[in-house]
Amino acid sequence: MFWWFEREGELLRIEVLELGPDSFELRVIRPDGTYSVETFSNAQDLAKRQAEVQSGMSRDGWKGPRGSMM
Image (cartoon, rainbow, N blue to C red; front, side, top):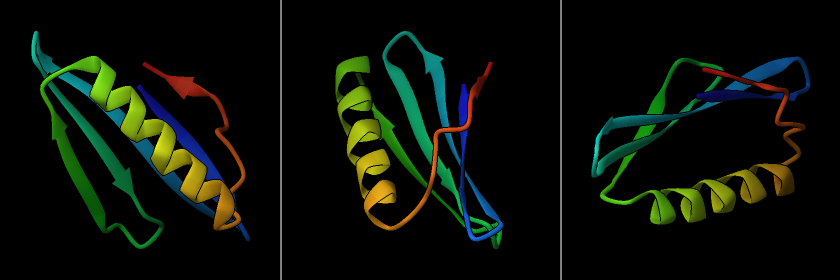
């Protein structure tokens, strides 16, 4: 799944991927195309970190999430 965030006409995307039963990734793709990837072995840790990232983005002025896609 992924979610879009907007700030001053720029878009940032957060992706959550389930790679296997105990393998997840959280990706943040920035407007300039650079990205970061974090890996997790359970959905609970992934969800906690995703909430932290989204809270930080809100503090930095990003608006969203703007829907989700699977």
